[in-house]
Image (cartoon, rainbow, N blue to C red; front, side, top):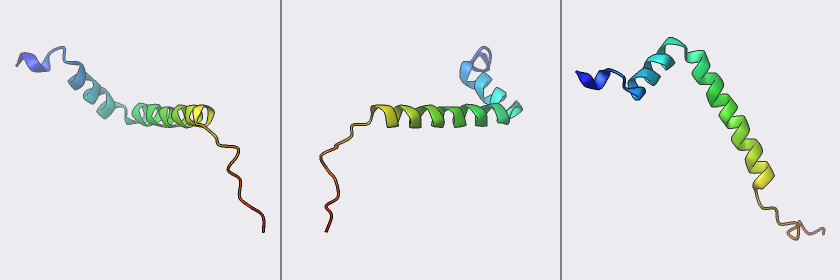
Amino acid sequence: MSFFYQNSVIMCIQRVCRRPGDAAMWLFTGLVVVGTLYTMIAPVDYRRRPRRK
């Protein structure tokens, strides 16, 4: 029974079940941050341009 006392995983699951809006907010924030970092850090090849006909 000591597994359930002071276990950070169980505490996190209980917190998410009590307040699912907070979990959704953090997931959305993480998505925005990852998308922003990807657009800032992603390598861009400026030499590859579509050819005009």
